[in-house]
Amino acid sequence: MTPRTVTVRVPAKVNTQLSVGPARPDGFHDLANVFLAVALHDTVTVTLADDLRITCTGPDAAQVPLDRTNLAARAAELLAARHGIEPRVHIHIDKDIPVAGGMAGGSADAAGALLACDALWGTGASQSQLLDICAELGSDVPFSLVGGAALGTGRGERLTPLEVGGTFHWVFAVADGGLSTPAVYREFDRLTPDAPEPAAAPALLDALRTGDAKALAATLTNDLQAAALSLRPSLAETLAAGTAAGALAALVSGSGPTTAFLCADAEAAHQVAAALTASGTCRAARATTSPAPGATVLTD
Image (tube, rainbow, N blue to C red; front, side, top):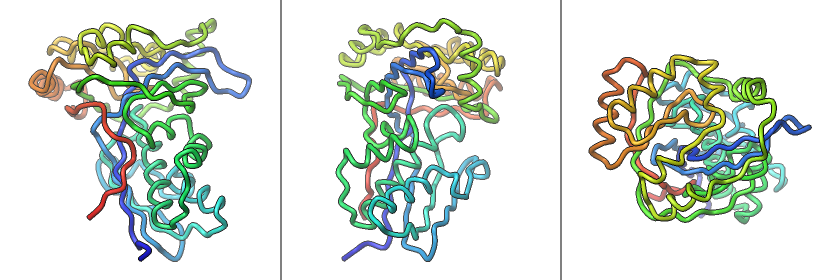
């Protein structure tokens, strides 16, 4: 029997390395982007309907567009167009990933909606076909589909899976408001006019493979961090508060303004989260782990 509703859970991400090259003629940047999926999730439920519509609940839901500019709607439209059907679905997003926070929440929702619509409509698309649509939707969407750990090259959409040898413990500090990714890249271009070609760091890949948190902490990098701090100087206080509380390393997550703190173990993560919450330098702090699976259809 064809389902009338499909629900997909999809993870957030952290960039353990975000190496950014110079701007390309098309306006994008070549990247060496080492993605790690983390166990903070949005849940996307797609139901057959008379027309395409989107609803959203959860923290910061009011900031999520509910028209066809939403990447989840675009995902449904692209999949439907490829199979000659009308995208008549109600997409409901239960939001738990910070909005405009550098953790690929919108990309996660797009990947979730794509996988849910594929299951709902029985289109039978291969993962390769779904990844093609993901790449058309945005640079982070392919990784949201596959999860785990991967090196993203090109503008981040060309993925090479990476081995992870253990569980890493993280705290994410959520800032008030968001940061525009295009604005952060423009500031990066201003601050780094002669950016070198990006390349993945062998030491960081080794740290992931062996599951060595201290080695990973020593190799975490984000070329967009200086730009994010330039646009939002107060993030430096959040980074300092997490480090003072015992985090092994601290960095801006992606284009920010969420900040990420790698911790030695679950107890340390709990302590860092409590200290960040008490510090007044962020709106909320969330402890979680990585890696996490990619977009996954939930069954009853």
